[in-house]
Length: 242
Ligand SMILES: [Zn+2]
Image (cartoon, rainbow, N blue to C red; front, side, top):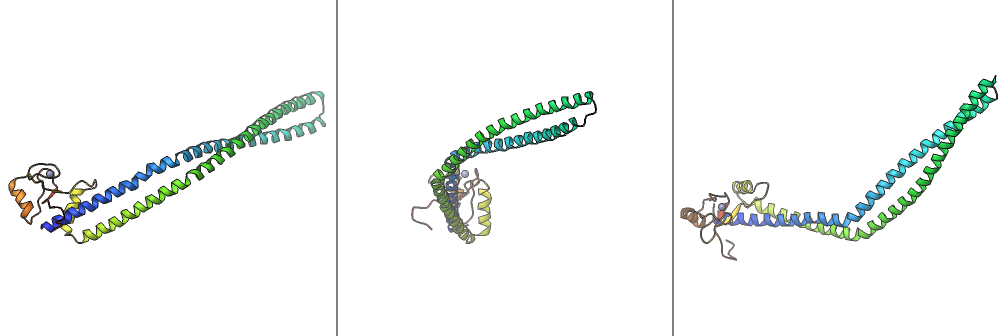
């Protein structure tokens, strides 16, 4: 492995490092957006609860109405039957049932009235909550859009960085590139480190035997740190890109 290759590996690692930092910047927008959207989410949840309760009560009220209608019908049938009773005993039985049906009907109607009253109050509350929700949405929208736009911009930067990185990587030796990727692994750990002036691995700081130091500085072979496995590269003076 030539010094040029080692320089290329270092450059690749630098590009990967930049990509990671930029990706972290993209991810950091998540919590910021959550903060901005927090009040809206809260109001939306509250309005949702009221809306569900409202629907529930309307169904309940409808059930009472249906029950009342049924009692009405029954009451009419009983009233007609009263006209055709054949004896006092039959009359008493029909009258007793009619009275019972009428009392139940009153109860149903009363319950329906109470529910209607509650429903109209709930409807007002729901309208208020929905108005607050609309206002809160409008309030946070500019900041939200701003954050989304910024996130997209950083995302575009990341895409461009990745494109440049791929372009760079295609010029590298595939086997060396593969080794670099294997060391880096899914977590993106450091894959290349410079030898320190004292001859230690720049990643784990284990001092390398002199022979290895010489190979790293002057040899063409690829040398890895015996302790941590990173590819060792000679340090270069600033500006001497090799
Ligand atoms: Zn090491």
